[in-house]
Image 1 (cartoon, rainbow, N blue to C red):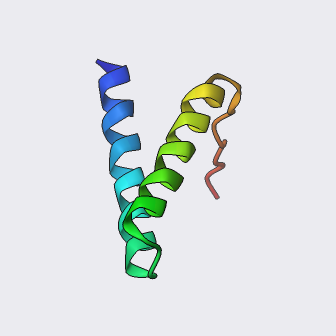
Image 2: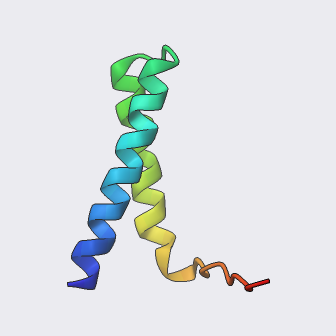
Length: 57
């Protein structure tokens, strides 16, 4: 269940990046390639990424 939620969040964030790139004039296929490469690297290294710790106050 948690993995599905993480995938949905990742997909949503990557969609935002894709739309931003296209809006800035990056060719459609180049934007797709950039987002795909980003997703691949995130999934490859996700285990070594430490979450941020926020302190209240």
